Length: 136
Image 1 (cartoon, one colour):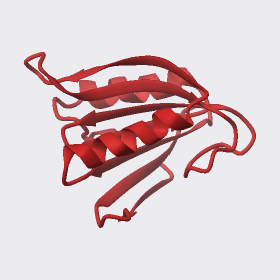
Image 2: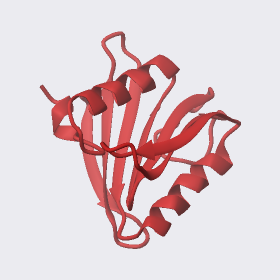
Image 3: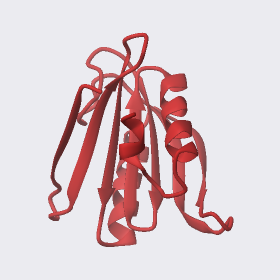
Image 4: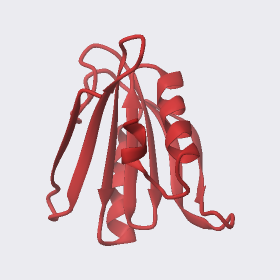
């Protein structure tokens, strides 16, 4: 892990960002924003979908009982979009999902890295995000 940072969104929500380097040197970024409302989380989710060059997959985010609690989308974003943690010179993959009022994002240059981090997060926890589980 390179860096853990936090800050406040325009509506005062504290967010966390984790900058990680994979074992073969590729950067990957993860973010969690526990917004106060489902609508605010959904707005953030849709803003990423609108920036996408391609929406590769979209599905419902399900809880442990299989009930829908949000949405999930794997996106390909164009090079140099005006968002944090984007590579300057190439398209990149972004996985975004909501779980109630919580907005989550994983982004990286390679799709397999993004998907592997999601798998690890979900395997290590039955909560939406368990970032401390990444630091072993």
